[in-house]
Amino acid sequence: MSKILGIWGEVPEENQEWLENTQIPEAAKRLGTRALYFQAGENMFPEENAQTATSFTLYDPLESADSQLSPEQGLSPANSSIDALKDVILEAQYHTCQYEDKAKSFSGDLADVGCLVMGSFQPTPEMHDAFFEWWRGEFVPFIQRSPDFLRVRLWKLEAAADLRNQMVQKRTPDDLYPYIMVYEFKSYDMPWEVAVEIGQSKAYQQFVEKDLKYRYGVYHLKRIYKATGEVEAEFNKDAYSDDEEQGSA
Image: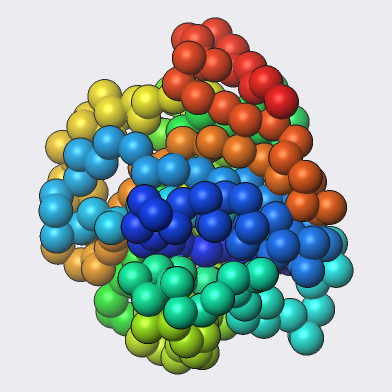
């Protein structure tokens, strides 16, 4: 199974340059893979279920992933005094991919993705199997009806760590939501009409609104870094149209 490292960030404006120009490039070099840096977009999910992170960095694929890999490798502050990071929060989670389905036209390159919708969740033990049967059998095919759909993936949490209060510490996976659903669309904005329609179904109200603990976030690709730490491409809203997305280095 493929492995990824995802890092959510709550970073003050004065530390953004450190994150984008120092921390992420150095982490990409340590991990030996490219990094995809996303910024939070408009989130229309209820406040109690909304992801609060203002950024998300995806290190994918982890070509050299093995038992020695740890989330801390993506968090170690790079070339910066830790004293300057007292208000920075980074949450790193190491996952394995449990499920993937994509549009035939999608190459798998996240540079083609305009909108990334991520849901961290935990079904109740009683509904665990039934939830995943419904999700794969009904929910995913419904999402795939959107002309903007590119791919859906299901990740399972293996390990986690935080950079918080100027310290890097391991997290206990049992304290976190064990799964993440990742929906990738070619449009810059999430196709909310799909979410609204499926949200009206009885099955959704049963499995999600009643029996699921979850948080959702919407993110847009801003920058791609090479495994060497160099910037490969940059993106903004104007780079996308209804028909295609283009990035400029």
